[in-house]
Image (cartoon, rainbow, N blue to C red; front, side, top):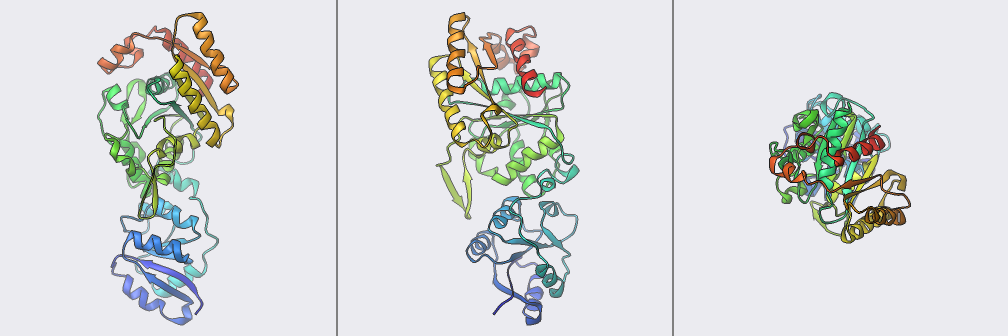
Length: 394
């Protein structure tokens, strides 16, 4: 028996049984290979049998960006029946009216073109105002570094503030899936803004990106991180990519603070969809226009920086010119500072773009929840930072 092979999954929607009966008409040229009732069953069957398409109810809670992307990578098209104008339509899938009859569905299935393996860029960015205001050219600057505490968050926060002070519309994103801390550092509400944005992106932006943000210092908008580290599976790959794309479409500069680990050997499989603990870091690095690697100015910090740079070089899709190194807590000794700079140049091929000095005022920054700009506006650390801003976001 030949025909367009489909899987139907509507979890008992009112239109499902009438459509199944109608599709049994041989003249329509459609062969329903299975009716699935839940997410794991549908995805597993589709990846195994590779039908031409799946027909779903648009109201299903698990019809999201990652499901669509997974099916597309397998060459399976997605058709949904539901109300037009729903957020799910912004996932770039074929939407039919809920009352469509079998002949209409069969005609659409017969006319399906080649399955695109990637979501439409406008859909990824949220489809205009839904996600972040349409296609844009904002730059994504990812602040990363080796293990330990070289000062990634400190650099990210103040880099975002300085970019905003220079006139850029700036978003600061806490993308640390291990130990988010920007909300505490700035004394703003500790809400799961990243998870909220990821959930909205997964569903086609029913909640606009702007509603996931909070006002920060000097006009910076802030997307707070995960309040608890165990919530990391809430942020899925395609949704996180869509969040970053929507952010770049809405802001001139997006500064993303990420955790150190980028290994992918730790993997859980849930309903056949992979979740990786370090997804937020690796996903941000892959989308970065510029990457800032922060390293401490001591033998241990430098060694960790070397290891991080080696890992980045081995897996990066960007040329080495996209990564710049800054050294934090540089000793006052000119000779030691020169040794640190020479070590960085030796392993990266370029000298660091900044040598941040030791800044005692950061003790007040942490305790008072205020940025260095308000605690010590004439700080030498800030003067050095302004050179970084000119280098990265000019």
